[in-house]
Length: 207
Image 1 (cartoon, rainbow, N blue to C red):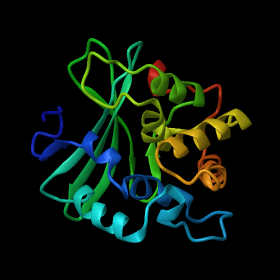
Image 2 (tube, rainbow, N blue to C red; image 1 turned 60 degrees about the vertical axis):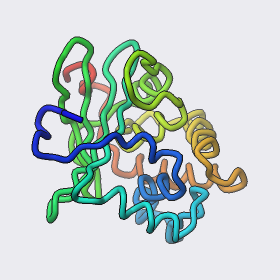
Image 3 (cartoon, rainbow, N blue to C red; image 1 turned 60 degrees about the horizontal axis):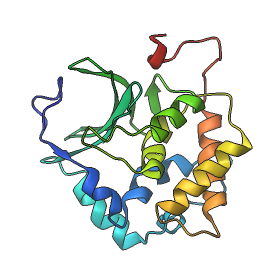
């Protein structure tokens, strides 16, 4: 797999990992830590167990294979998520793809916290709900929402958003009786570190 700017990285398609036990706890659990959450986040919140999470982390963070998750959209920019598994420089990079362009634009990265530009809730939902079936990548709308969720950077977080995130977690394997609580932990993190002002532009509007 080739992505401009990652010529030296051993990129591999990560989409087959989405259905593996342990994926969502690896991807989202760090977002539940700290802040007002008194509980230590657990893989069980996402329907996983510790052994599943540990086993898959070896695959996700393998320096010789960097998983890439493609979230193409049919009616506008999409997102690419790359596990940048450089020894001593690990991180998750978020790239924006634009229709008609041959390159992807890095807009953010995760290294214990999100740095860079984010998206509004409406933009996150638009990307999640408009898969491009003509392009390789993730088509399931729940998985698409959760993959793009760390980019959320908006003051406009509503009860409808909580319901949508809870449903996506359930679809991804989280226990039905705790999915809403897990979504609340995610929302608490997202809104705690949000710095987006409605007057600012976003990467989708070239702002």
